[in-house]
Image (tube, rainbow, N blue to C red; front, side):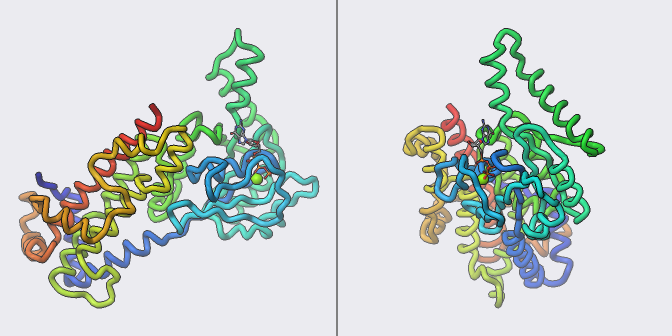
Length: 392
Ligand SMILES: Nc1nc2c(ncn2[C@@H]2O[C@H](COP(=O)(O)OP(=O)(O)OP(=O)(O)O)[C@@H](O)[C@H]2O)c(=O)[nH]1
Ligand SMILES: [Mg+2]
């Protein structure tokens, strides 16, 4: 088997190389990769008391209400301060449960100061019934401060359920959802919002109603670095999300391969990766964690879907669990694989001196590129199997 460098990758590789020497390019790429993993993403959830803020905080982090670290739901919260909920796997991602906005004396500007608005990348404004002038003055103020906001109508499952039990003969899900949407948009227009956009959701069903659309919209409206954090933070609840994560992680493999190749040729002082083995180990672990193939995530998923964790684990065939990846394991994998082949397109012959010198180094460019790509493919496949098992 061989992995082929894409034209895009070759172009970037060439550009990186042309910035100076190999060590310089490697150091720069590594710095870039490290800072990417640390880019903070702070998501603010606001709305009236009882609208479902805390439930959303849990949903967006892939947690059930009873999971460790979950926000308390169904209890009246009277706190005046935002509460930070770290992402269970990514320390750079935080979801903030903001105080309720519903009090009669509510003042948007004061509120935003109180919650330290500048900290957040965007705001989710939730209503479980109608949107009022409170929501809109808040949105305006957020907009004035140069931040984005998204109107979310929660608990649509409850509306559907009520309709189904009370008026079963005329029940039509699409029509009811459209009715809710029209109504929200009318509320918002009446209160002065010019071009309202509303996402209908149920916090217990991340793959239903407008949740996928909301997720896509957020993703598209974030800049590249924040998007990287956002995609990796998404709960692994659909095949599409797993594909997205895979594509996001794949983008960076050639950079890791270059760093690896450079390290094995010349020791580079000041780099935190000290060996190519370490690069393989750290990134393979990162892939597994991103796909939820670690003990904590699997235990959580098993509980959420009411299946024994062993049943989920039984479909993981190609990769070990994140917790059991060690340097020794990577060495044994290297010795077993006949690998290392990287094919270079003919159009890239002018790159031969670069790639040639990279290919000759220790574990080298080619091996790292090959190993990370095939490991990422395997991990993604196993993650899809786990998801299918969980949903079956
Ligand atoms: N059916 C349904 N119920 C929901 C949904 N989201 C929240 N709830 C329920 O609504 C109630 C309030 O939800 P919370 O998430 O605690 O609301 P909150 O906005 O954090 O409330 P406060 O902290 O008191 O301001 C709880 O009983 C939730 O289980 C949803 O999408 N669908
Ligand atoms: Mg709450």
